[in-house]
Length: 169
Length: 169
DNA sequence: ATATTATAGATATTAGATATCCATAATAAT
DNA sequence: ATTATTATGGATATCTAATATCTATAATAT
Image 1 (tube, rainbow over the protein chains, first blue to last red):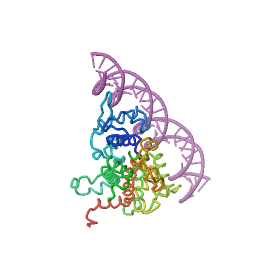
Image 2: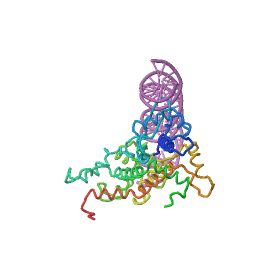
Image 3: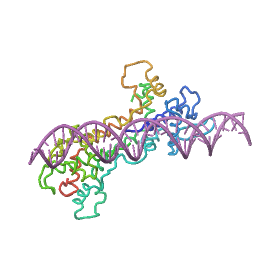
Image 4: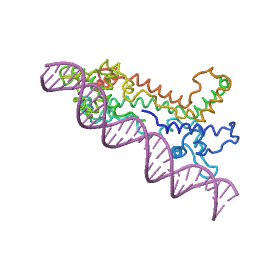
């Protein structure tokens, strides 16, 4: 039950792309694309491996990629339109966190029998695994939080850390 | 990012132990211990593997185990004192869901420099990875939900499914 | 004492995550 | 058009964790 390193890499890469768009920084010119070399050096991850991750992000429309001289990556949407959930699902896949692998067991048959004594199809969806149901609820909670937090969330935190007086309520 | 099958098995096993304590059921006598054979047959999981899982649950004080004739397992606490989080942490371990593996990277050094321009140790905890910070928040949310849901939660759901009229508001 | 049941250790198998290399395709600059 | 540069996709290798089984041992009720 851990997020993979790839997810970590992806999130940091996107943060770097977002920061690269901001003019004030050391690199004078504003919106220059970021090549895999620069990303690799900044994050301390091999180019080969990072490439795969960036490709996935491109296939899912999170970043744009331009090959050739002065090519590289840039965010395909505004930073506040890239949620943590988006990124996680691209890298980790979209299967649920929990899957009841004993649905065919005697336990479920017994519980189901009692429930469906009289009416067979009156209340659909009521025959699912009750443990699964709790876990689905947990996943729903988690997803909501991850949808509410975006790359922009991190940018805001960063600028606030930079000068804490600026956004004084 | 998936819970292991072992977690699924553990939760179902505990539900079975909880149901075994309730008198009315098919097995006339009330609080008989449940052996690994019965558990294995009910869940459709091999005895060998299930044993390991039950051992872990015992080591963590979730169930009690009695060897010998008529031995078996029973819940070590009330069903409402066994949270989903308890079970998950026994099986999956207690490491965090997310670990920033690039904390030593140039990216973090740069972000940290800006933040700690003047005061060095005035605000502790402010130098952590900002992405990690968001993920910790997600984990906190998830854990809260999992602490609020117990084996008893499932029992209640089950009895409500059994006769929907009983607990009319 | 004996049959029964859980426990712990060793080990095998599988699947997924992590990582690298190389050939190819696309693009900008000349 | 040619060339240098950069991303892409395929193949493959390695490592780790999850899954699973077997066997010998310890503990307990009868």
